[in-house]
Amino acid sequence: MRKLVIGEHRNERRRASWRSYYRRNAPKIRKQSGTRYWANREHCLAKKASYRRKQFRNVWGHRQVSEQEWRSVRDFYQSTRAMGNAVTFRQLAARFMVSPRRIQRRSSKDGGWALRATT
Image 1 (cartoon, rainbow, N blue to C red):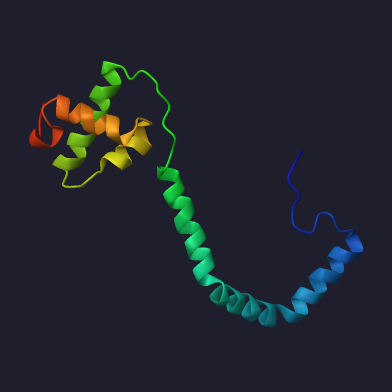
Image 2 (cartoon, rainbow, N blue to C red):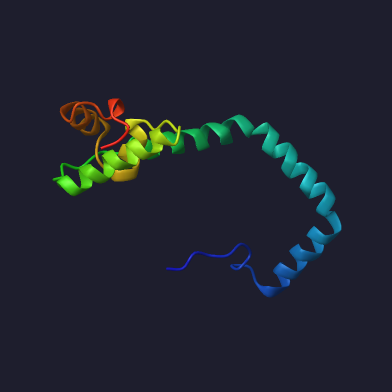
């Protein structure tokens, strides 16, 4: 089922009525919406932050990661460090869909990726 567009469920006369009301009262409605935003700002920002945190809190599946995939993870990690950008195992995990703990164990097993800038 397709999502409704705002006002689509109203008939044509009510849509016209709303448009004319909005045209007459637009400055007042805009001011009220700004007031409403600032009243609920903390809630909105907290919701946005929790959504961002939830993106990183994935439940990682137990999938086999091939040597080629590990090589691409390591190459990406080393190339971003070589450019002067820091990347965490959690960010790598979100990008390559492997748990941060597995990435950490693999980097330790390979002698520590952070110690080697080149391969």
